[in-house]
Length: 399
Image (cartoon, rainbow, N blue to C red):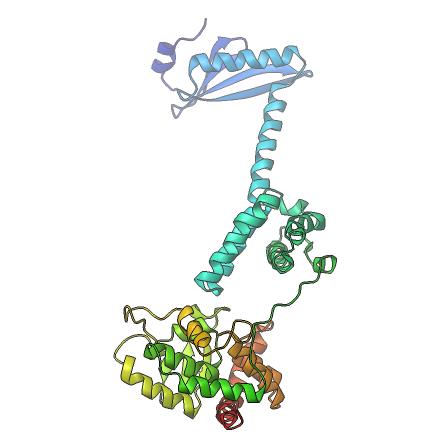
């Protein structure tokens, strides 16, 4: 006797499981706890098998009968419906696993752990490069299936357009993701390793900078004599040659970061490109300039507030425009060029490369060595920063 919805709804559970047959192998399995599940019994290859269609009422009587009829059609074609269902499930799980383990998924997972070390601006740039430049090319490929050629093809799009440096940076990004995949046990090897050898060599971009002592002296005198514009711009230009930090690090400096007792300026990690706190020993000349600057902005948050609102800071464009007013073209000098000015001449003056690089806050590959260097070199850095300030002052007389 065939089942009806009324029969199914009113059936009461018993101490043991019940099988309510609907014909053609289809039956409703009623468990002692009251749950009801559709099953179909059939034979294939000389073996008794059982196919599950889901619970009632989620799967209705009509839907269960349709599923039974579909299974019978498969059997007529000598296809095992249970094996087909298992294959489909396995294929779905494999596809879901591939999606979880593809380049885009792994890259996003890596980025979530890595972005805390970056400034918001740098983090946004990396994320944009992943989403708009790499994912469209290799995002859907499982990391286990990525070959060197996949990565080369993805970055050579930019090589062909003449963007050689961009191509190298993208390959570096691929390498970071694939190393993360190796570290997390997804792959055995970093297939990005060594691939830059197969790429065109970039022409290293150097920021225009004045480095010859006589020209440095002339620049220092020009800055001294510059008396136009807002005080923030004048003092920014006066201080940056002595501290040679990245322009944004100085522009955003806050008074709470300056310690006049220890004569240091501590740039917090959130503003550093490499997301590491950076200490700048202050030479006597810088301390004197900061004391002067305090009279103008010491009652506020920032050392170099904007003329429009003291709650914000000056832009890079403002001191850069002042440099141009002084007669220095973009081919001669940039704000970033003060770093090259210091690096070149400090090397000429015989200071150790490690000490200079630490003060420039350049990337240090060995984090243990970095921690050691920061502590070990502090006294050397203090002496170097004072010697550098004295050297800058001395160049004025040579201009």
